[in-house]
Image: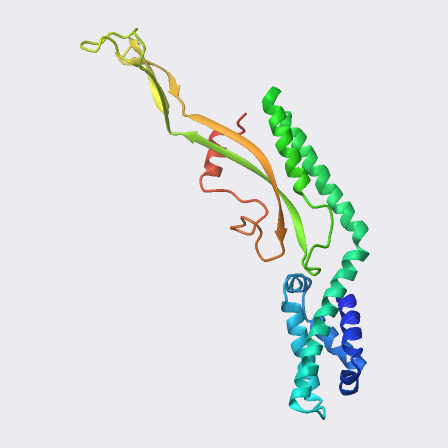
Length: 271
C-alpha cells in the first residue's frame, strides 16, 4: 500500500505544471515516502480509513511548497495549494484502490473461508432443532448469510472493513425457582379447603420428614440444587478498523463476564 500511494501521489502532484516548477518530482516522492515510512502498518490502515492520512500528507507537501518560496501572488499560491490538496487525496484513494484490486483474488479466498465458516455454524445450529422450529431457524440464517458482503472495495474507495464472527456461551442459574399449583386438592387446609402445592428449586439440605438417625435427627436425603442452564451460539457483523472492535471491553480475544468462571468451576460442562 505504501509503494502504491507514493507513486500515485507523486504522479498526481507532479502532473500540475505549476507545482512541478516549484517542487521537483523526486522531492515529492521523497517527502511522501518519508511520511508513510514513519507510520506503522496499524497506523497506516487506521489513518487510511478516514481523511487523516490524506490530510496529513497534503499538509506536509503544501508546507514543502511554501518553503520553496515560489514567485507567486498570495491568491495564486492559495489556489495552487488547494489543487495540491485535491491531488494528494486522489493519489491516496487511487493507491489504496490499486492495492484492493491487485489483492482481489486473495480477498475472495478470505471471504470464501468466512462464508464456509458461517455455513458450518448454521448447520450446527439447525442440527439442534427439528420440525417447524428448524425451518424458521434455517430461513433466518439464510437471510443473515445473504446480508454478508462478498467483496471489496466499498464506497468511499479508501474505506476498509472486516467481517468478524463471534461465538458466545451463556451460563447461569436461578437462585430460587418456585412453581405453585393453586388447584391442588391433596393438601387440606382449614377455611380455604386445600393448600397449594409448592415446588421450589434452591440450594438447601433435604431431610426425611419422619425417619430419624440414632441421634434423633431427621435422616439427610441430599441437597436441592438450583436450576442451571447453558447455551451457545454465534454472531457475525461488519466491523470497521480501529483500536477496539464491536463490543470489545477488555481488548482480549476471549472475554468473560463477572461470575462466569465461578459458574464454570461449580457446574463444569453443562449439557
